Length: 182
Image (cartoon, rainbow, N blue to C red):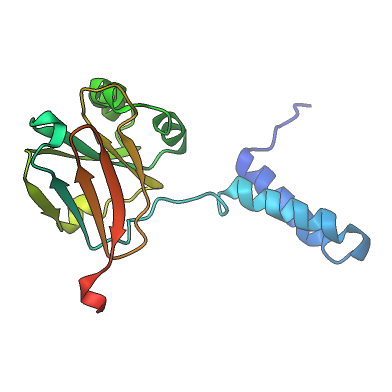
């Protein structure tokens, strides 16, 4: 007689069913909770899911001496793949700009990119819903400055507007108040 291996979906159902059956036994209550939690993780309910940022707009302001009086390439990177996010958290801007095309090909559903080029003294305000409200686990900003350094920001918009300020040798990001709520 041939033994059949249960398929992953059947294992998950078995784990959840076993956990529900054990739930009535008070001595096994904690074990049951652990099994239910494990089952939910296997099914994917507890895993983070990409969501659109809550911001209304992104404003990029370049000082008059930004990037030592040269245009600055800026990428807003909407990361949807957890494995890619781990890699990008440690990737400096120079490497990002050198490999972004390859990364976009390798992870076509895992990353979305909005690329800008900002000249010194310029202000850009992005409000296009389709561009700045892409689904993401996290949003990163990279600026292509020649001096060595990370030149990477973890963007954490909670609401309102987000401001990227480009200076002579680096950039900063900040949440700004939402004028519509005043």
